[in-house]
Length: 379
Image (cartoon, rainbow, N blue to C red; front, side):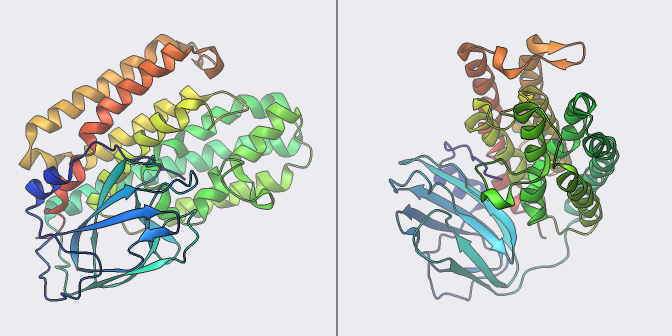
């Protein structure tokens, strides 16, 4: 799922907060200790990531990415462990930049700039990482894991009657059950990339994947609203049910980091303001405001999980973010109806701009949180 990081976070702010030791990409210095943090700078070119490969010491790493490519399909850098995306700076427009922070242990990770003509690179992380988290960090991770488990259980329960209606060919009933099934998934999207291939299988839009891989919620959405039928959707619906059940099992053991959770809270809001605001997420059903609210709820839950860590270093910022969440929720109220929200197609350009401004205001402050708490990830 493509995400957009707020592009206004200055490198200097990151350095000030983390007391970062800056390391050039590709440096051979493997002597850095686990308590140091590094800033790795990358440029997106038409070929992909520059540099292709990089080295860093185990611990907090801030990835600073500038987009110098004229290729409209090249707008993000991803760090992967196997098939799992650990972090990314998506949807960086040409000439803009973005950052994200990860805490990584020793090992080789894939550096990928999707859309480029070059091959994936390797991030080599070396040295020892303190493996014992502070009690506060462990508490943040476990609180958020409980939220994931609660919502994936709800997802399984809400998807089951939706799938049954699709299999039965009851278009009207399936339409009525579509939005309730979408809500719990949209809430857990801050860490959707941790779900590996399950995320695109469940939630990819038509243009996100090859035509023969387009399945999940949005393939059924297209059939119900655009094609006006559930014919041929039974296998897709049954696979969707199997996938959400697998997801519910996976969240119990998926590896999570406090910084990753904070990154996800910000990235999700960035995606809302950059791409979902166009109505492309629910392009057939137009229930986009249902998704928006669930996304903001999920982002708030991720923030609340790591908030105790932020309270220690910057309680003023913590309070401002809480107030901004209230502002975003209030901005959705004019469009609420008795059974949800008005169709997204009823919003004017001024309406969508107002929503985007509220979300961007919040996301700009949320973008400061990962750097604030990175040093607390490990004692």
